[in-house]
Length: 221
Picture 1 (tube, rainbow, N blue to C red):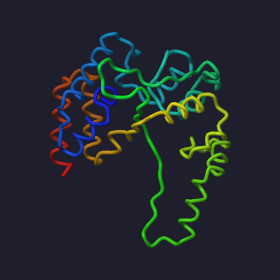
Picture 2 (picture 1 turned 45 degrees about the vertical axis):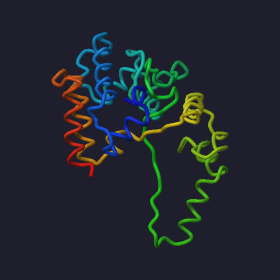
Picture 3 (picture 1 turned 90 degrees about the vertical axis):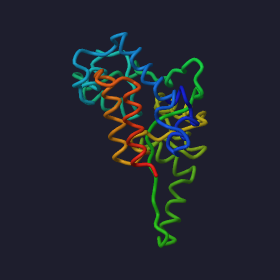
Picture 4 (picture 1 turned 120 degrees about the vertical axis):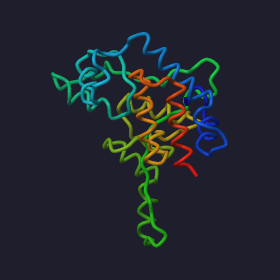
C-alpha cells in the first residue's frame, strides 16, 4: 500500500477523509495474491514462526525475506553453523509498483523515541540533547546500538548492510511507522489478522479492506 498509494492514501484513510477500502489498499491485497500465485514460500509457511523463517534464511534455504535490520543477528543465532549468511547477505528497498504514488525510497518500519513529561527536570532534557548530538550518535553507531537519525551520525557505522540501509532511509521522503503500531492497538490486531486472512485465502482483498475499515470506523474518531 505504501508503494501503490503513497503517503496520501494512508493519511486520508487514517484521518477519515478517505477509507481503508480505497483502491490503494485493495490493490495491495491483489498484488499479494499475485505473489502467492508464484508459490514462492516454503511448505507450511502459514504456520511458520519468525524463528522458523530466520532459521531457513540463516541456513541458506531461502533466497530473501522482508525483514528489519535486526535480521542478520537472528539468522546467525538460528543457523546450524552459527555463522548465518555473513557477507553473502545483501539489502534492497521494497520494489516499486508501476503507476504507484509511492516513492522509490519511501519506507515502512519501526522506530524508537523518548517521551519526556512536562514536569521533567532540566537535566532530563539536557540528557536527551546530549544523546541526539552528532557525536553521541556516532558513538552509538560504533557499538551497534542504533542506526543514527542525526546527520553526521552515520560516520560511526561500519557494517555494510547498515550503511546501505541508512543511505536508503536518508533518501526517504516518507517514513511510515508499521500500521499495526501507528493505529490504535485494537485496530492494529485487525490489520494483522486481515492480512493473514489474505495469505490463508479466507478473505479476499476487498473483504480484508472492509474488515479494516469497519475497525477504523470504531477506533478512529
